[in-house]
Image (cartoon, rainbow, N blue to C red; front, side, top):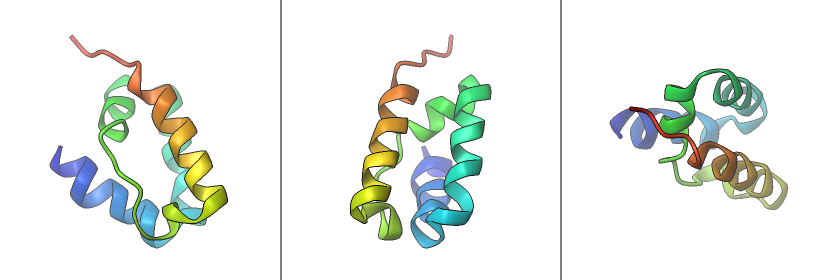
Length: 68
């Protein structure tokens, strides 16, 4: 949870354009990363209209991941 709420959401929030494509790619290829991202909240630049739409869409897709 700390990785999601302290590190990841702040990276995306401070430089959405740079970090979101990397986050999106990692969510698609790494189940543990997808689970981590599913706990993030929008922050800073990720709250801008188009960015928020992309963020929430990816969060919905990542939220279905279950790690056993």
